[in-house]
Image (cartoon, rainbow, N blue to C red; front, side):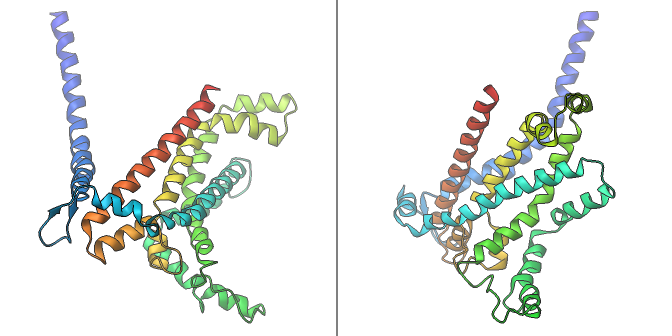
Length: 293
């Protein structure tokens, strides 16, 4: 009886686990994998989204790789990539400061995390008026005596800097919260022992904080780089991809819904997915190598 009861308990546990996992897995399959497989199928077709579908094999992929304008937009990702590194550095700096004994720490945490609570569309509109040629920033600069302030969103040399700044402001709060939680989870005895040994603030940061929060750094770095490659909301809302701010995702959206080339856009989306997966794989290998060392 005892063996039978043990088996029944194990079976019940398996049933409970399977039941709880069934719905999440079903949702992932329905809303995650099935659209990807459908998109993969569309990438082999010539289709405008309404008319007849024509199988054309790999011609869409050949067009993607043979037209340089589709890959020139990846140069814009360099701005966001550098911005993501700056974002991580600033977030880590603020997190370390917030973990020290300063007054009103909860207030500062709320202020820094607040942008992450605002919808991307709202942020896009806010900064569109902020960086507008006759917007808040240029009006303020004119008050300071600048007769011809920069054209932040219409000058191709400045537009991506403005959009990158907006992206940093939008997402830095999330990194700060992650870093603060990771730092506060480190054992306090380690810091006390380091202080007794005469370690300064830089040595504590380098030898205790950075190794201790390495997994969180890895996750945030992967998310930041993937976001830089596949950025969409902020440039699309603020400039519509104009003035040299178009990204690969915006090109894909325009191909699908402006030019009604669903098959070609699907091929572009598959290419972007492969690029993101490859970048994630390389990052995991790099971080894995560092962990092994």
